[in-house]
Image (cartoon, rainbow, N blue to C red; front, side):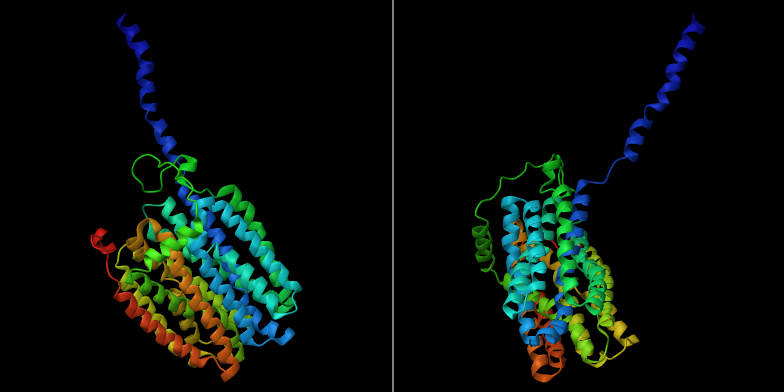
Length: 447
């Protein structure tokens, strides 16, 4: 009996060690949090938006040669595009609260495709302003950095600075991918095929957004990444998107921090999108550099921009955002002061050093600016950041026009480079005097 009992119990003893292994195998198959997939789709969409925004700087000389339009006129169309890109952002953030991210972004991509495609039929300057300035400006503005802020705020509690840096780097990635391609098309096949390429790329992203992007973590039964507790219920749609966007602006505008953030970010836009992205290629071409070489240098800026922006997101999680902004603006202004003496007909080591240095700083300002908006304005931070971004694009639009007009008047961009460098020094001082909200901790203190 004893032996029989021992034999009958032996299989049970042999099976027991296998049972703990099953959860271990399931743990090995556990997928990353869905928030990272949503961030990946957002990243791809922002890449496309950056590609659409990279074309205007390549069109200045071709449109001037074909239609005889002045660079100031073409620069004005670009300035309308840049201004609407920013002014649309806060309303787009509010519309995403009302109708959902997917619907707003998909509609924006269709508008961009229409605007880019219709430019191939234009023959008058007002048509350029309407198609590329208004339609593409409105569409791309709906996928601006306020889109990244909305996704980050909804889907992430932990790693917000890092995710902000990664999504911001999507703009640099788009520049890296599209600029060499579009410059090659413009150089070898004229500008119309390049405009068609932008339209096709916009339409190609629509199914990806519609099928894979989700508005809230609760849509898939999850809590936000890093959140404690069960999934939060999906918030009710907020009506009156335009009214909410304006209300957030009125409330924020009563604080000095808003004007300091908006003013510094306007200078940021003036010294990047308005000046370098729009006028670097024609300025280098003035010195005898081939268009493809100058566009390739802008693409290299995009490479180092990715590194700098992701690193800035990591720094923002750990250091005071005010001091980070001051350092970024001061270094950018210094580099712009040296650019007029570096431009030449060939690529040489000092120019490469400028490209690397400037690339690391290109949009490194975005993660700390978003962090300060979250600190100052809480629940409305995405919309307030949209208004701060609007000032960025208005600054970019003003300099896009002024840069072209200065080139027409003086035959050189030198004064514009020096002026932008001086403005960056002012932005550094503005960033340092932003007041800290009582009761909040610096990133360094909370890390």
